[in-house]
Image (cartoon, rainbow, N blue to C red):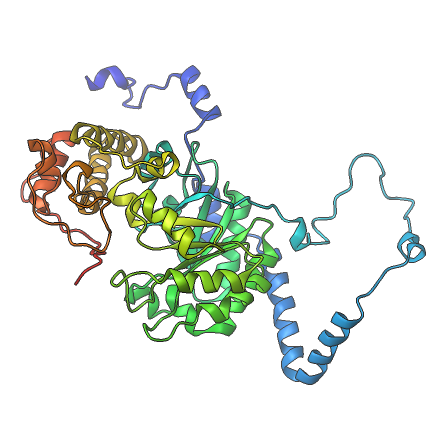
Length: 472
């Protein structure tokens, strides 16, 4: 079999005609090539835009610190007497006779575009798939796009790892051709790394927006001052968002929690600042870092944040598992622009179809199994069909099954719809496959993976990475 795919010297046979067609419509983009990786590792990549922005920001900060009273007076004068340029002054332009006048003359390299000239995204009413670490990979996002997700975002990527040319981190920003509105989420603890990473991604990747992670509750990330840890460092947070927004020409968005501690919400005090610093969208998860995923999200507080951030669009996030939850979110928080869906999409990726069609879909076990087949095909296409590719596909399939088994069929519910914060009871499905899919045992998840990817190796053990329960 192998000889049919190899040349006499042991290399893969390439059909040049088919390969040329594939390169024209490559299914996934934003790959890291060797030349770029070399320039990053040797630190010879041109970050002049970032350096100019940061030096300008540092200079303004030093001047403000040296003369705080003078700075306040300048702001008051500028607000009271806006400068109006006369027509005569505007026409006094010196012309150099040696300047070529043929063709369009652009000045992006000299004059940065204004905030109101930046590319804008219409966020109104969009269904936004949350950037989900580990499980929000490209094969899963393809399934969510198939079921009606409007906005997708890559998994959280660490800015320092992006700048070091890490292949594992660059794999997180790959984009499929079906993702028509796609962003990358960056996580970092200083403006230098975050702004450089943002410029790099804008230069070499195809993305529509860049998201700043202010909500990751993981201890390893938080203790470094990243994720939710940035909420404690307002000056650094300001420099991160301001410098990123001033450097890149695509929208910069923010995803945050209500605060770090359960009894001290601080997001409301930051919302007007996010708007003034240049954020194009703010997403608020209605829980604190300490709460993780326990307790109910505070949608009344999300409404307060949305009002304070106006006219900047605000998305709400937290416990959306049905179209009733989606509609109730707009009742509780009428000022929000849209809703972000995270664990609800992991438990039932068809939730986007339910919301758009305003119905509870009593999906059968065979239809759910077809979704798993589609995921496996997407995974083998993305990670490869060799031994390593099958291992990766199996691993991420099992991670997804650790969420997918929590789904309770609509036909078995006494009081539909299912709620995300309710512990699912033990039940017997309407057929054996439905019962197997409802099992919370890792061994049963492995059985399902064997139905799709063949037997596992000897002594194979799987333990889920995430324990994002809504109960203790």
